[in-house]
Image (cartoon, rainbow, N blue to C red; front, side):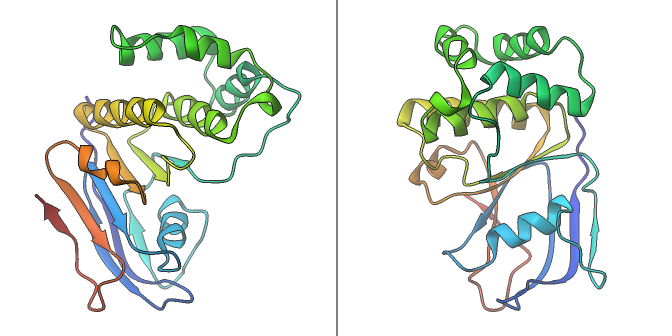
Length: 212
């Protein structure tokens, strides 16, 4: 089980919104809340290290998988090819064996794994937008890191796939991982126990509140 360190952000000024960020993100679920244009994705980019700000201090973000909203892959290659590509990038050998061990550990016996097996053999370009998002999340969250950042993970997913992704998030939280997510989905009510809410629409910008 992970003993995840917190991520600390000090003196970060988000471009465009000029919101000042001073927060500590702890293991468990951290929900970044706000309407479109409030800087949610910008904040995730800074936490992940994609964007830099020399005047801000961000610590504890050394072990992160960032699952953003942009998915680029050749339409002619299969989902198994995408899995092999991702695992090769992070140095994981025997990708199919490792991935299916992960799936069996997470979902047995509640889930019909035949569905994912069929998707994995399809060409990327033959999948719907929701299926691409679903496979994308499953593969990236099978890579072991302390923190997982999910930007609108439930967009385009049907209710069955949303429930499966929540199950995966809950599993990671139970292991002691940190989750940072944004969402406009009302299934936010399915979050287990307490959640750390960071509301970007607060004019005074809080250091976060726990709910419930």
